[in-house]
Amino acid sequence: MKIEALGHVVIKVSDMAKANEFYEGLLGLPVCAKAEGMTFYSLGNHHDFAVAEVGQDAQPADQQSVGLAHVAFKIGDDLDKLREAKARLDDAEVETMAINHNVTQSLYFSDPDGNGVELYIDASDVWKEDSTRVAHIEPLEL
Image (cartoon, rainbow, N blue to C red; front, side, top):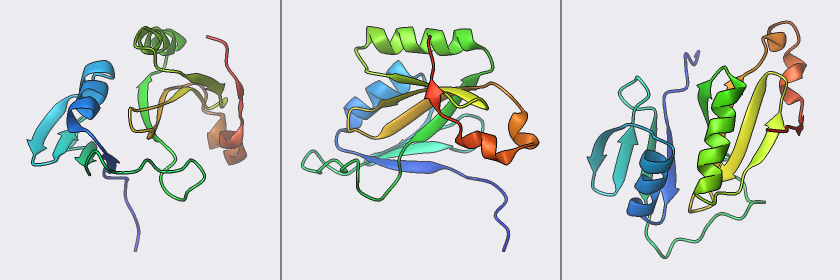
């Protein structure tokens, strides 16, 4: 068996309205379809990302639990794109952490349910010659 590509990611949320306001409204992800308890977003495929409502009584995952750590969305190749995203998130009072991975420069934050989200720009092709470079982590000043 050979996996050809990552198809899509689905995360669980407690409140669909809040999730849609966050992912569609704040982050600008384009909605391609809605179904009972689900919203599907497309970045060029039939769908790339979806949220599934599990109910307001659902308990958020503990940060030390096994499971998905975060989902990452590329927002460009230019540091100004990351600065613009940070300003938008700051205006919405979303706490962010900026990290330089050398191969990417990233903003990390959480959605209303505590699901991890990363917005990033590609910064370098150095990983093509040295795959260990993807593990680089240092603070990033924006």
